[in-house]
Length: 260
Image 1 (cartoon, helix red, strand yellow):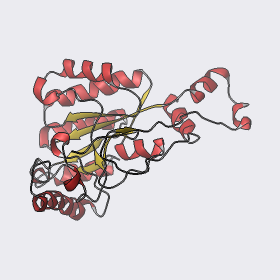
Image 2 (spheres, one colour):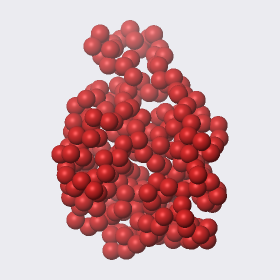
Image 3 (tube, rainbow, N blue to C red):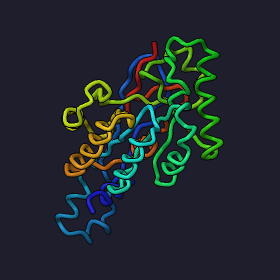
């Protein structure tokens, strides 16, 4: 009920659009106050009204480096059980043999993005290599899932101005990174995310590790209990009222990452 009210309240939210993609990190605040018609307010009891006018807390859960047969399957089962959409930035070379997982992601409402073909460091790659790495994965996704906007997450979150100008989609960074690939400890990853997450944030995890999958499901359970609603990255921007621009690297809908 609370999630439905939060989604409804967000319809009345007003926000600023990011005007352009600059070289420095920028923060743009949005007015998240709700202006709800009086005829609706008059029909609600006090408890329901309080939930409706509270600022909704949205967050996006993202996964890099997959798909991987065993771990991604378990994760998708857990997400489906909880009714939670996520965003998967997939590596092109991981797609062959895992086509059914990609089709399942799309069918179950998850967003799918591009994480290059070979997890290449775009910051230092030759421009032709940058285009090739993005294009090869985009072709695979398009052939498998159809035309779409397959947003890019640069490997290591790093890309410079010159190479960013070659990217034809928005690029997504993150606000919370528990370094799950390093710790391989579900409890530690969960604690880090839960203690650092904020509304409109983007959480970085990797569906390549069993400990990360377990952490993701624990994070969902804890944050939902705290009133958070999970959405895809694309939904996060849409709800916030921000139209992301191609070639820009976003840490969140309200913050651009600097491009070296």
